[in-house]
Length: 181
Length: 121
Image (tube, rainbow over all chains, first blue to last red; front, side, top):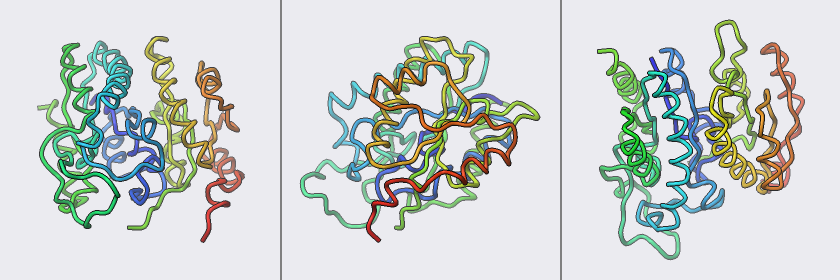
């Protein structure tokens, strides 16, 4: 057991980009697993909400990969890393729970399309998903590395075409159990 | 895809999210009532950590508030009022619930979010 630092939207779907909220408020499929296994839950800020606002467009990583957004993410990462460091100093295990496919919160899958821009119209589907971290997770990862803090990652997968709730649960449980081995 | 958001957000003290044994599980009540949760920093955090987190929370509250989302405060957190004041937002209506029933009643008594009452069908 330890502390799971979760993406903001897992406790508050109101923060999602418009048309992106899967439920009214708390996304229970992830939160319930963490709590059932005795993990403490701590919510991270939403990097996109405070920067681009509630009326932001759906975006890929390249659209957020600007110096200004990285400075914003570095500020957030510093604040979150302070909290993580306090827990790590108490000997707690740390897991980051991100949102797969997100340009900022992806932990192993983000989104990419170097050509996307201009008037926001593009086909349905998920061809933009690609391996890698979102920009906030990348900055937080760098900050935690700098502080010498070890952590594991898990991702909520609702945005992926391959999403399956049982698979998501099993994957999260596997990550939570890794430290117990 | 249909967007399921509730336009209702509760600022929630950590002890209602990570309840001690026998404590009130506020997160479960809020989830069942379709409220989103913005978790406030644990009181155990050093001030310098908590102040940074509260500043980020306040900026997000300001963005939600400008768009007509409804806020309540469940529990309390030192420094929250000051952080919100810095972005021009007041403390929302609050409750220190002793039971799930008390929290449920408080949530049920809240008005509709301005974003919903203003939105066209």
